Picture 1 (cartoon, rainbow over the protein chains, first blue to last red):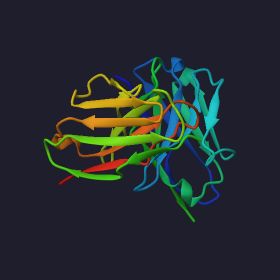
Picture 2 (tube, chains in turn blue, red):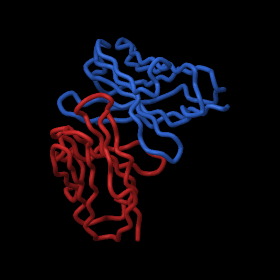
Picture 3 (spheres, chains in turn blue, red):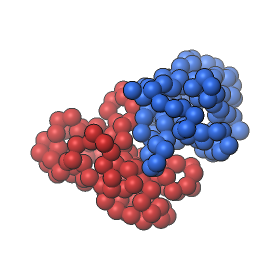
Picture 4 (cartoon, chains in turn brown, red):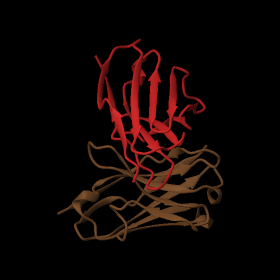
Amino acid sequence: EVQLVESGGGLVQAGGSLRLSCAASGFTFSTHSMEWVRQAPGKGLEWISHISSSSNTIYYADSVKGRFTISRDNAKNSLYLQMNSLTDEDTAVYYCARDNMFDWLFDNWGQGTLVSVSS
Amino acid sequence: DIQLTQSPSFLSASVGDRVTISCRASQGISSYLAWYQQKPGKAPNVLIYGATTLQSGVPSRFSGSGSGTEFTLTISSLQPEDFATYYCQQFSRFPRTFGQGTKLEIK
């Protein structure tokens, strides 16, 4: 069974940093691109970052570019999101999601981790 | 960036109704579109990908249509478990934008 488990969320002051992790199991992690998606309280989904299976290709949303860094460790079956210079607009539930290898969809999602930024 | 506009944003319907949700892209995205269902406090779950392909395990009352800039999600006969928020997402290019969502409520 595919499992994605996020961790690392919490309360942080504006201007601070946080590192999220996503532990993957039940599939060959090294063959899948991965994503981070967030959802502010009561709001819609916002795609924020993509990393290819070998980390060769990385993309960010403009809203986080220059402040967030996505990375992965295929040996540890883990995905990361380093978040710096946080503002209250970064308050959200952060989900990691798996890209399907053959089609265009996010076919598995974690349960999410809440990041709250206090100003 | 490609913008996705869903309509309506809110929809009130009854069990057994047929409902359609539209998603319009600001530029052509071929068939690179997926639909997700999200229930409160839960992660999204994919329903449709490639604009028309039903994800494994998703009930056949869900269907998708469209290509280019106009897309539709149809639920043929609403069931109680279908009341949720629905999002479209494009995979034509980065950023992989989502529509703003359509909240489907019980009438």
